[in-house]
Length: 210
Image (spheres, helix red, strand yellow):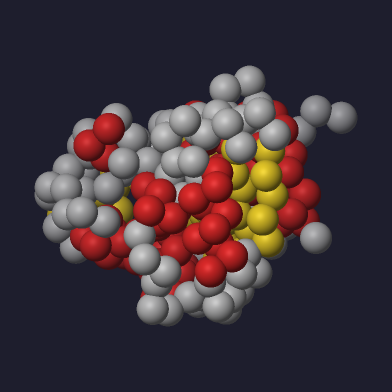
């Protein structure tokens, strides 16, 4: 049986610097196990909520019945405000998470992020109760290990042919953490997972469904 596509709605969510452009998608005829919020790549390098890896992460969550929220950080497309070097973007993510909890009360949070969004999600997971965290090719690996880490189950997916965030750097960073993520290396995958999105979707959905 072919399952109906999730019902999509474009809207604006109140944020710390003004309204944030967002898209929610709610699966049809499925019991929601959680709500999912997905953080996009670097806004100064073309990152938006419509990035293909971000959409893939949202679809992986939808496959399991979770309503999803993708949003544009401050200053991106129709979101108010301006770029704030990751700190303001983390505040945006926290505001979106709080909004999602108000819309779907009582559900746990699945939080994910790609590249720059991986660092945003990691910082937001420290500030918000998070049931599952997923970071894909996280740019946070370029930074010093964070002072605080989320205690939730955490999946880190990395392509070993990443041309922007080298896999050895990411793996060394992850191994240096006091609370280590569950690391999945995709052989031959580039930073944007060209030709590998279906595999990324399946891997993510399987991990969330455990």
